[in-house]
Image (cartoon, rainbow, N blue to C red; front, side, top):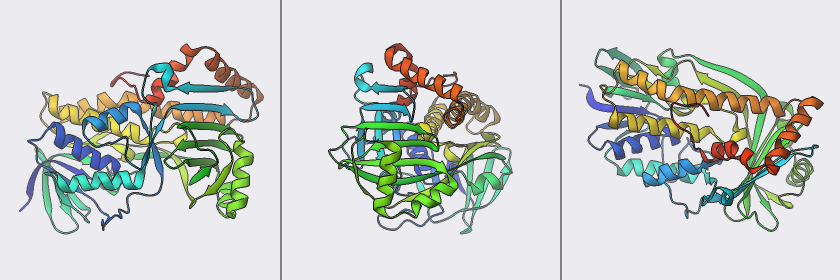
Length: 395
């Protein structure tokens, strides 16, 4: 006999775990279940890698409301200042939290310990956890979705939330399309140390081969995201430590100091991906299952967390029946504009700074230079960095 739930979340990664915990916090009377495919043992969770993510200030504030974020945790570091530059050209821009009377522009969080902390909270909450388990079938009826798991368990739910990543098996099982377009770039991810520390200063640098980002971490480290052509990714990951540091120093310069050490290097291909629909019958799609975004602007998890926030608030305040067509349509209307805007702007930014045209290069330089000369021009970029987005409106 199927077990009855109000909400079943598929995926216990960052988006799925924060979604379940957020709904449980704002709607404590609901019966919630989470289905996670990967076995979790001790301090290891296969869904979480060694990457770091940038949390916008608005994301930080929301997670703090849910008691899911501690700024003094050993795996976090504040971003106080961001510098943006275009290699080989004169334009640059600097944005500081002091200019906007904010404690920070955001935080850098190590995915592995943060994800494990969220998962630990899942195990302590009044949430049914099916792990390891995965979806084998979904039977739709007027008032519910019946989810059959590989273990044979059956879960009947008013609302199904798909949050199992960009390759989402559940989204594919329902036949929801996911439009993808490769950027023909890959990203090298590594932690690097610099002489003299970082003073909570983040950097975004555009080069002829692709963008680079340095995000401040604890213990004078930076989280490096280095985007380049896939062939170059393979060449750079094969370098020994000294040669890699020399290549990094040459590409980035000395504005962040001298790079002295690099940790394990990993890489992954960069792809633009967006679900054709955010909803299906009594179903919503959130996080990377709904949108895969280039890391150039650090918006990935922030965008997914806004999915979570809107969904949780909607469950608490909507006059429409949970999971009904009117409910899922309301969710889609509230999220589509923000998602489409961020996806489009990020994609345009990638293509603008990947273009070697001298005219465009001059335009980029003038734009960055003007932004530094006229503080009012910084406001839109600063708001984007801090995640100050009005739901249902365009940026």
